[in-house]
Amino acid sequence: MNTMLRKSVLGIAGLAFAGGLAAGPLHTTAAHTVPAQVKPVAVAVQADKPDSGKLVPHGVQGAQSRIDLDGEQVANVKAIIAATKKAGLPERAAVISIATSLQESKLENLGHLGDRNDHDSLGLFQQRPSSGWGTPEQITDPEYSTTAFLKGLKQVDGWQDMPLTDAAQTVQVSAYPDAYAQWEQQAADLVAQHWNS
Image 1 (cartoon, helix red, strand yellow):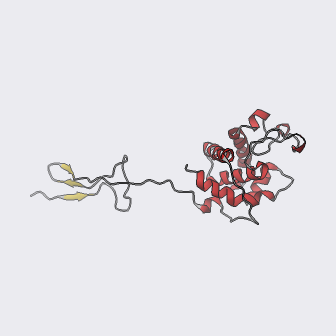
Image 2 (cartoon, rainbow, N blue to C red):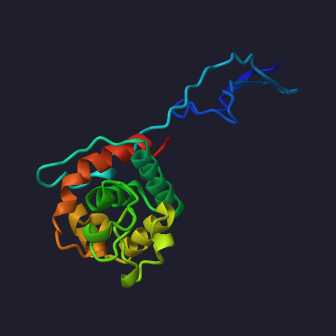
Image 3 (cartoon, rainbow, N blue to C red):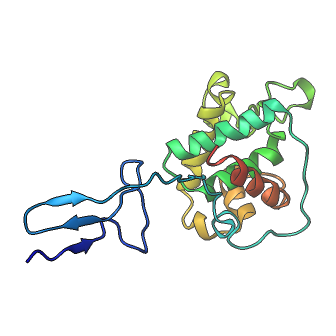
């Protein structure tokens, strides 16, 4: 007498999809295994936004500022996120980078500003060739300047657990060390919006 045993290919809790197709249960007999009738299942895959606890683990500090961004500034946000991912760093590193750039340049890739220039500061992070950040051409390349900033950030012991303004200040050594904090919420919102886009 053949007894039919029902085996589930996928665990009930998992309800995953294999190779992009939903798989159904198998019917097993003593003689052979026959696939059960499989009905097409529509699976909507949506890229989740990063967890806000990862983006702003300590909550924001102080009053927050916000600016409207144009297309070039949004492109710079995306370049910062891409460089962060390429460096293998988490979303929090992108939040710190974007907040730093919001403070330093309002996410504009600034060239030499003449008399208004802070010494020889250039680019998204207002890095200085004379301080060893790279050549003017390198510093005004968004990927390069972000990678240079992230390299400095990685050298900060415990940066992941620091308030944003402390982590940014340790890398940037600004005359206004607390100014980065005001951009944390907008930076987190931008990372949430663009991390998976």
